Image 1 (cartoon, rainbow, N blue to C red):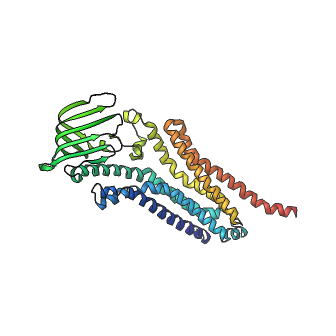
Image 2: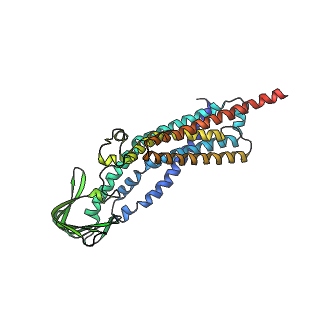
Image 3: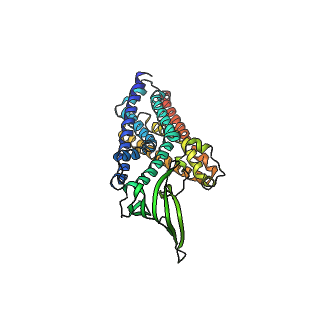
Length: 374
């Protein structure tokens, strides 16, 4: 890489890293503030709090990295324009490819980062986060809930016990589930104990009853039991489904899904959309480079012209992202829409490349036409 390309690459890389760190830090702090209830309300340690919030970083970086790249490229090209460096390069016969090459190298590195996070790191972090939240939920029941107090484990779920017995036994248990607006389920037991089976926490109730009140029926359905086990996973926001969500599955699992399984067949569109979104994500950095370079890759003499070009580039990126989200939504409903997930970034790259080629060719022909008319 020559000195000129190193210079451009250094400016763009520094701008990208500073933007990525700044945006990720700001958004991470806002996410962390939402999880403060882990410390203040659920009695978890600061280490658990940091671990939960850190597991959200891969998804944040994957979303922010393309936009940070866009800002970095726009900043670099605008700086070269403002300092008249692009004008000097054009006058010296420097081809647009020499300006594009260092930006393309940075874009390729960002695309590799996005691919790694999208295909591996993000699903792994989501799965770890779910396992950790399940553990926290179990800790809340056994360690945090105080005797005689009613506490909300999750929205719509109330937990209460009268006192603790020997060996961690909970006496006088009541668990009420009101997440379903049409029915309320209440568990009442003389005693219970939280235990772990094959890595999953269970609340084992003894000598109690299960009461279910349906809005359509006046009387409650009551079932008495001597022993009843409740999977603590059902106290999560997923409504008790132990099947991993599409975003929590590894890419290999998405590629080898058993479509005949009921829990997969009913929501197969979501798994299909998640899989193709992961493979399409690395294409967006290249589409963003194409948009930004077409907007500011050639020398511009006035600030007004640069301002309009930047505004159009921002608008193009916004439209592209809206189109990609729409294509992803359509792919949930129809397998035929999967092609649109890839078509959106690829068409942007193709359209921007053709536009740039025509524009640069026209500008190169202007001096020749001027000389011919003279």
